[in-house]
Length: 350
Ligand code: 13P
Ligand code: SF4
Image (cartoon, rainbow, N blue to C red):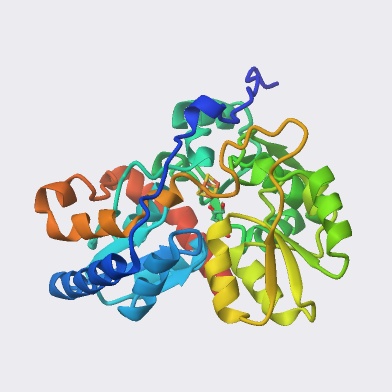
């Protein structure tokens, strides 16, 4: 039987950086964007951004032939694009995933300090001990993990495909060891009824959404639909009208007939939601209320590090750039690529 006792891997307030984005006048932003576009072109690089980063960075990615998407589509786009230099505006696991899938490409990020609380809350050695204590289980890890953790897994999933993949494994009669997000794990377990042993990590953004305050807000906007990312606590997903990944939230907002939405995910997503649905109203789900610490206030401090100025510095300062390249060791990379390829093949129906 297992000798591994699973501690709580939720990050404390002190472990979360208090990052303040610089506020620039619009003229300065436009000048920076033009400069960055020129430098991307000169470098033959493509910019891929997550929905949570600064809206200006998202617009720039699209205007320069790059891409804005969820973590699954970012991985696929980086792999399939012809450019041999990829700039990932997101968090470190996204840069690592791009590198693992395309080891011959050079992958850079505006800053390698852009971490993720789920990745930080799943140290590879401790995860190895957890895995070793349960050798009879199929190891399924969320994409929000380090290359070292992915290298120890059978499957990698993102929130876009986790439900389908776990349901498939359940149908094969497999018992699952899941890491690191406890809320997403519990949500999938409830939806699929799969036998899952769940690590106890959490996202500092989604962990903070509060049921009581959300119910109060719903009373103010009774016609609003509630859209929730499944990294949120069970009480919050439990009253949602739609639960899904960032791209699923965006799709739901466009397809649902409501004209007002309360959205429980990182507020960076509001940029794309408003762009695609200019006549609809989007309201932030509350993070305040009983027990609130507001470690993130619905904005990921690591995603916020992807500022225009940092991106500009990455492209113009070679010394700085050298410190922002993603490196994944060959052995780890090869082992981590297997479960990632498995996920992408599953999505293609192979
Ligand atoms: P998606 O996979 O939905 O893009 O989410 C990634 C993430 O980090 C959510 O907090
Ligand atoms: Fe990680 Fe949460 Fe930030 Fe997403 S929002 S990158 S899960 S800390």
